Image 1 (spheres, rainbow, N blue to C red):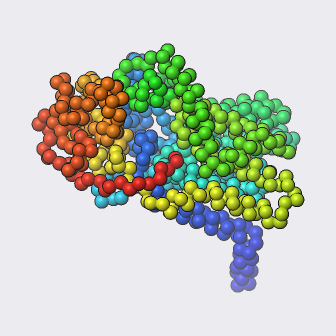
Image 2 (image 1 turned 30 degrees about the horizontal axis):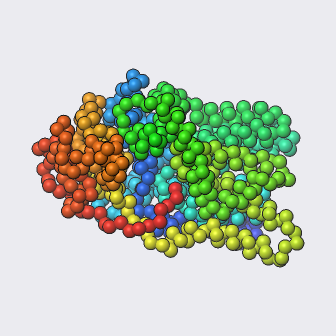
Length: 587
């Protein structure tokens, strides 16, 4: 009995001081963060908004159902590219050529762990797999990225800077929007921050005079983590390149060995997947590199992806150089400076021009700046969307807040309490975007053009062994689980898709096509052949002549099929609720 009382007293005293108090603090912080993410998700999430998020979601479903890394969202350009290389694929077994495998694999694990049903329920406010699997995976990535932000800042600076870094990260809308985006940005952030932490720890071990056997494994581990970030999203390649430069500069002894260890770890993680993409496409990054032509003068909007002809390389290279120069100011002025509410980025940019007493901190800060510059170049060229900068958000937060504290501490004669006031002002200003989102109107459903019951009902109008041709193939592949081909550039080429293992059961046109510029795209532009179809006047050689307007009572969308196949004049679901204006999230 005396031993029991002694043990109880020991536990009680540990709660007042030592590990127990720290454990309670971490638990309370975790509960508060989960509550913050839940409140933000309830306010700002009413379904996936990004086409790429739906592509990742359906890839994860394919892995779960044993189809391998095959996509049901197919672009005519991908078909043409594969056939040009002599690698024709059936539409129902078409390999994905544009995305990394790690995020879909995690989604497949989440689907299996939750046992969620993929059935679209018209009465549900949000599609169940998105609410129970996709968003929790993204939210977990944000939590882990914030934890690594704290750990990295504590290693490079001190406990106070680390706590403020974590707080600024978690209250920023840039981080919270990653939790509801359905994209791998948070996962990329976490893995990149882990790689930087492992590399910094290894460099410290080398500076302390430990043997190569003590610090080179850390450099190899950092390379493995960088390779994992690459597999989560190709946009992490810029951060991996910057960390490789850091490995070559941060180690005073045997820097070449550390750089080789990092490169070796990266190769172990990424080489098998790169070999697969080279086998399929001849390109290390697959057809993701074709994104640079999406908004060029040669291939306006989605014309590149919708074409069944090969790429005009010479003209495209000239226009790429022009678009790069035109996109640089936009990428710097808008995407970079608005990341993390802009304030932390400003301190980060100022800190790049300051020296630091620790060589390790100054070197890593400069390499993070290099990674940001490479990412901005990728965004200006059109290869990377603006959200890829979010993968560097933990590192930019660490050095932005660290630079803020460096400026405060260089003025020892400041007024008492000034540093605390300015620190809380930094946190409050970083949270302004989140506060505005939470106090503003709740986000509406992403219609037009996305409405899960409508997409599912359209897919039910064709047979399971048929493919659907649509301008939103990502939605019909995800919600309707149908092989979906992006609408070809010209209407008469729909029939040319028939001889690839699956018949085309119908054509699904939404507001994405109808809202294109009338003069610039629909009359004399690249989509002029679709204008008669949108008007209800099918061309003579167009086989899909029977159709219905969707939703019932509107003409927002149009489903066309071959004559004699429609048995009901109206689809099952009612019209979606009227969309409510909501501030756009930054993923």
